[in-house]
Length: 201
Image (cartoon, rainbow, N blue to C red):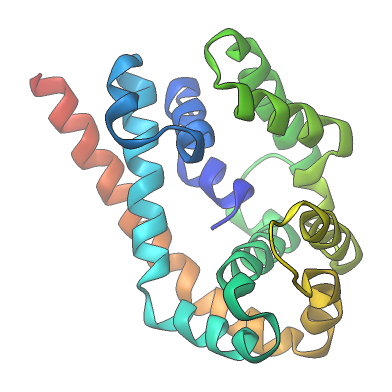
């Protein structure tokens, strides 16, 4: 999953949210240097990634993308799923997405002194472009994918992924709606396990 789903699945604890957000920039056991809540967030992030990457429904999404987008299919699938989460945001019982985004930016920026340098660069770009809100529309999602295309190390067609989303919208939406409730349940269980484990330490 991409940024929005990871944040949403972290719950309300600012440290867990922060750990989940920075997890891609924390290698191996480097997370052990952080506070317990942040460690939980990193471990939750890694669980979510593994669960998503190995799920049969997500594999169907990636299989549809692979002929055109090759190795970038998993990245595009993550962004597509964030789009459907944002587009259907009102059904998840949270504040409006614009308010949710503002509150997230505030929480992360308050933790800026402990963020890895790469995470600081990401959050600055995210706030400037209000990425979380951009996910709500096909056009905004396409723009994010175009920006990702220019930063990728290898030649890719991610700049065309917005058109792919538009062309096969219902197929991707059906897959997201079948998969995401399962992920919510699994991530909630994992977070409960982590809370119990850390309480015993």
